Image 1 (cartoon, rainbow, N blue to C red):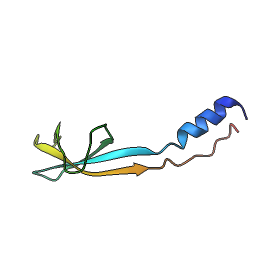
Image 2 (image 1 turned 60 degrees about the vertical axis):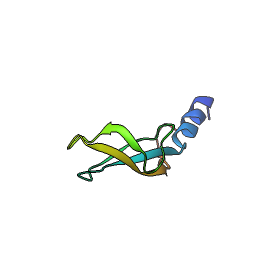
Image 3 (image 1 turned 90 degrees about the vertical axis):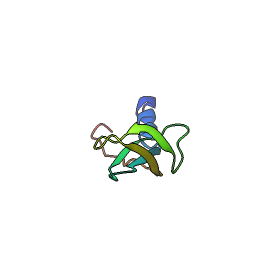
Length: 73
């Protein structure tokens, strides 16, 4: 395999960390990429898209991307 294909496969296997925010008032949930400095129960500067109230970090978790077969290889 060429080096480019190997790099593409390695990049697709990297674990991605996500952060789940929840509104304190209406309980609306928003998922976003993890940011440095995030921790559970942190009140963020982000506002709820539904009611504009403060949101806090409810959960931080990792996602392993699934590899899709390609007809290139």
